[in-house]
Image 1 (tube, each protein chain N blue to C red):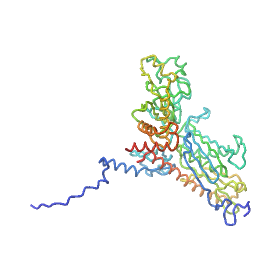
Image 2 (tube, rainbow over the protein chains, first blue to last red):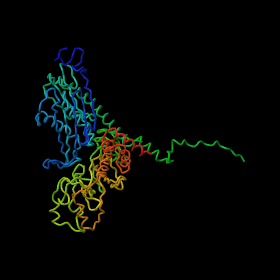
Image 3 (cartoon, rainbow over the protein chains, first blue to last red):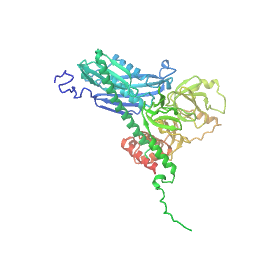
Image 4 (cartoon, each protein chain N blue to C red):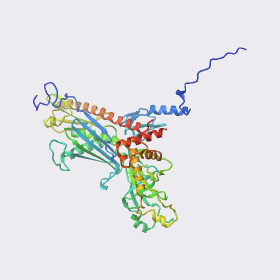
Length: 245
Length: 309
């Protein structure tokens, strides 16, 4: 099997997954004590830590919105998160773009009208990077917002998919991304089946769009199951702790 | 006369209808509660019926279905459905006792951080001014930092709340006011329940003030008995000087702080009873050792056991 072949003769990908298989997801809510809500999530080798503060008093008076809460998103990439260690500028264009995509994804979902003149801060820290930055950021933020008890319409679950020749593949990792496979990221509202984010940065033939989107949506539903189970288990655990009888 | 003796009827089985105290309703109620403890997550359908009223943590979709907007436990009072999240910011209610920190001094008011979604306001007219009862003057306005300056901690009562979720405070009684001689800590607000009194003097000679907003103040009891009429005492309540605190008192304060931390880490409710149980359980350890995970677990378990007994 050639190193550059994304799918081998047995139909397995470089990391041993099938075409429609997600990477292992591992997640945990409430990992930080200082923040109002936090989460840690691993999708394969991509690892992300999210912290949510708020709703709290707006820091800058000029930014106050009088009818709803202000949401800010900040993403940072740890210097040790990639194979090459390099010092990053604080305002990396790429990170700012992803941050604004995450912000736009959550703005209609969080019930901001309940918190006029307040601010909700979402901080995302990528601890290890192996592809799928946007999706992991959205998933981590969802879990942290739920942990913070911030009202939102429903979960937002994100997943990416791509296409190699005629096979759609789910949840691309870094080596697959760097082969130039077109990657489509979808953020899904699993209950109402609405899509809040659809991101595609390369060219993709329009005939293929439908199958790739369907694949990403399928992946997002899997992510939803995992996130929902995690937060339910966590709540059950807390309930048991608070009344032991 | 034909007398017929009936077989004695067996009494209804005791386990089914009565608990240990012979209280029938309680058992049924607890069974019902156990049955009804329902955990929901955002977007989940709670009820499809339109007869219910929409409470906190829920919303209606276009089909008039009640959906949850937070993850938590469903609570139902008659027709009102609410979802109580297990971890959330504090929302001020009138009459609540809170502990806060001054963040800003502005025109005739202070802004106070009370762990809520908006900073609370404390009006100059809502504090106890030094001296015998009098109206506030312009001189008071100019020297507001003499009463409270940025970073000062205070205990206050919520006087009212506004549309946007912020609240106004008052410290008109001598029970309230600036905090000194102690240590401050933060616990999840849901762990502090409303009780008759939030000022507690523990047996170990430490005062604990439990703010409903999750801010807790552990201090050495004040040696002065305050009198509202005395000019001297009114000056004293705004002083920034700590009294001398001995080594034993410091250690007791630190121990109580660590015990409260241990309780909050194990998500147990924080009351004067649980604190004193945890304090007694912690006496086997040195103050520093209470921070370790194993000792937190031990202390929490012992406290739980005593609560059950």
